[in-house]
Length: 115
Image 1: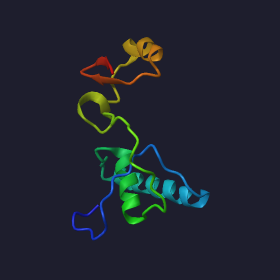
Image 2: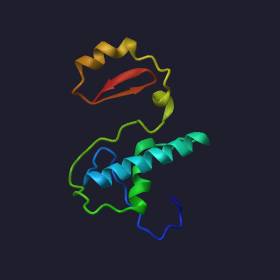
Image 3: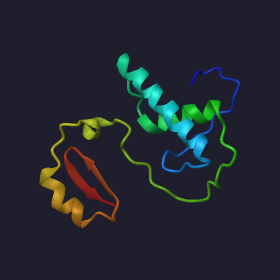
């Protein structure tokens, strides 16, 4: 998004979106087109899907925005350190991750920390 945009800047959490079928299809199609264009450069935004979602909603504001009075944890999926390394071997952690599948965790420097 351009820094000098006259539109307001609002952060939209990537896990929550929905709406009428045609609008959601347009939303997903547009995001996919932007991703394919960026792959040609090659470029991947720091927060990948959330970066695209926020850009889309910047130019196509949603009709309804839920209250921000709910808590959520921000994950490290945005490309910090080794967490975006697709060659990261998680096999050694797989059983531990499956046992704690309903718990929050962080993998940093190939070490799992339970939250």
